[in-house]
Image 1 (tube, one colour):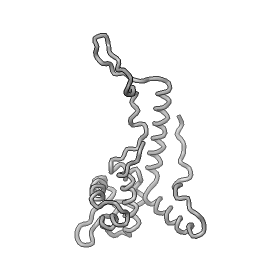
Image 2 (cartoon, one colour):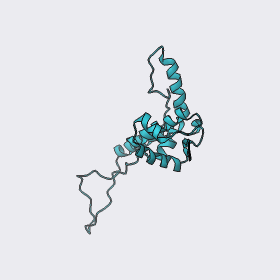
Image 3 (cartoon, one colour):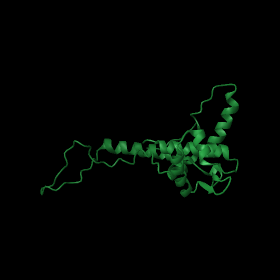
Length: 177
């Protein structure tokens, strides 16, 4: 359950593109300079983002990248999926005994696929599957537009009071267990 630098950089680059585009193409070199992300790495990310249809490339003088859809139609889940991020906390829960546990063998000496199937294992798996569902829903319902508006509201509010930029949504929701 770890968001790698690939996912964080992709989201930062997409936000940079959203903030600085105004409908015009933005060059990767500009994003690289502003965000201190390697140009080579951005090229790799934007190749995936273009394949995932969240950005379009514009060739020629004044070329660069633009959003392929409205900022309100591109979710954080779209961006992370394009670059191959999988932050589902239950994806590795298979019920296979941990290392150090002796592998079971049948009467002929053949290894048996041992599976943990205890109440504790099933409760843990269910809990993390629900957490994954909440995370995926949150990512799917937060768009580039949401973050852009949050930032603009924070700029206006920042003149008077400290801003809590960590809370994009106040109510994440709940999934029944």
